[in-house]
Amino acid sequence: MIEVGPPAYTGKRRAGIDGQPRFVFAAVLVVVALVVLLLRTMTGGGTQQPEAHLPVEPLAPVVPAGENPAAMTPAATHSPSARPSHGATSPAATSAAPSASAPPPSPSTSASPGTSPGATGTPAKTIEAEAAANRRPGQMTVREVSTASGGRAVTGVGNNRVLEFTGVTAQRAGEVTVTVAYLSTEDRSCWLRTGRGNWQQVRFPASGGWDRVATVTLTVRLEAGQNTIEAGNTTGRWCPDLDRITVAPR
Picture 1 (tube, rainbow, N blue to C red):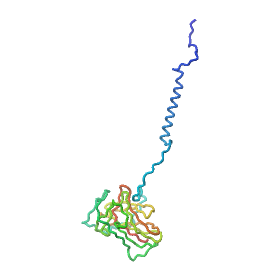
Picture 2 (cartoon, rainbow, N blue to C red):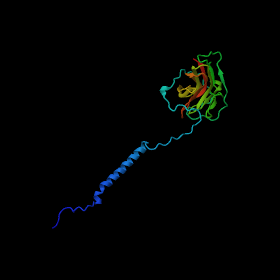
Picture 3 (cartoon, helix red, strand yellow):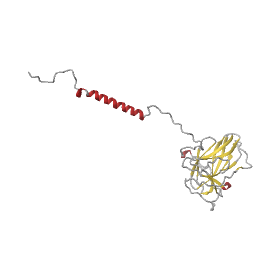
Picture 4 (spheres, rainbow, N blue to C red):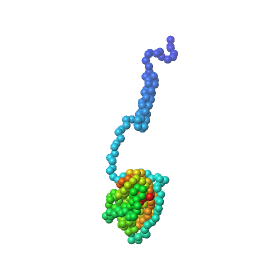
């Protein structure tokens, strides 16, 4: 008799057909494991590496990294105080670093006589930007300008460099008025602070020329004892050339 139908079961599976589900399941597990490992790597879920400690740069203080025009302190006064001198040499009104050559600094600090101290016990005092007692990085230079106080001004203030005026003394903590004399052919801004207080950004309108002096006035707080007043700017930005500051009681 001839039998018709599937062959009788012998107890052995055909590997070519019955083994496929196991192979597919194993492949899916491998793919899932790879995806999980990739996601953990992308989200930082793996072993955290210790933070690298960068060397500390013991240079001049770093001024704020960003500018917020709304936080600028407007100039209380803008009064050109000298006429242009046709014989003076005017540097280009760009952000280029000034010339490395400069005349020697003039150690000049003077107090205005006959002024009574205010609430802080601080008499009016004028400090030249080029005074030898100030802390001035080597990249800043002193240039001759006949219309400036003392015939000199400091150029190259900014670009992450700070000019520090020293010699401001107050008997008691309190607010004083600071008048900054400067020179610039264009509107600029500059960061100023007293001691280790907060930086404040101040607008300096164009004075009318690199040989024409103008002033802005602002209010700062002094602490009892010795104080410093700093002026600087962020990387790639420059302050105007600085002639002097005058600290006076309010």
